[in-house]
Length: 212
Image (cartoon, rainbow, N blue to C red; front, side, top):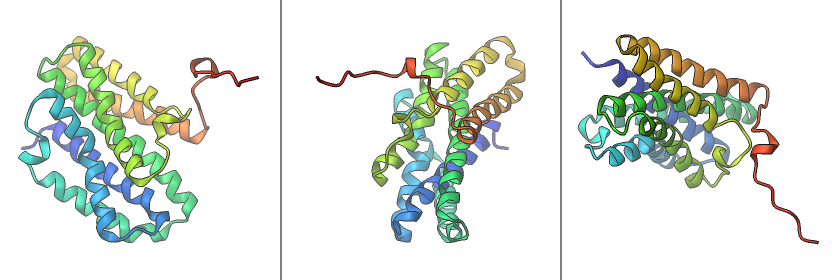
């Protein structure tokens, strides 16, 4: 029987593959290119994580991850015509937030179990993994990355990962419940930011004076 973390990872793979195809949909991309970007986006963050942890890359040990990414990409490619361009953009943001939440918590769980730099490193690695696939997707598709905007993107992940580390330290016997709770918190914060256009306060942004 597969672990709870395994299924979180599979859900994250699906979510990020979907976002990749949704991002490319308005560009009129072909099926092969959409599938390739879907795979890269789906496994990109986890690949970075495993390289940092110095463990075998997860999808090389279980090809089901790649098959799920391919399947999700294909389904999304043929289903995207059911939505308007505005609906596709909004849907992409929500699915991206869900995928980021899943990967962040799965990574914290994995690195915590390995005793990798507790307690700070699991939080940092969770953030890197959560945004890694999305960064690759945005760079390869030629769009501005969500990380480089004022949107609350990485902040919800930071909050959720920090809380999960605290719960793992305080109530380790309730690991699965804590994981679900933190996934929900990250997604809820990200969804609220999308719904009500919540942004980072101006005083937390860099300011460059104009010449003259």
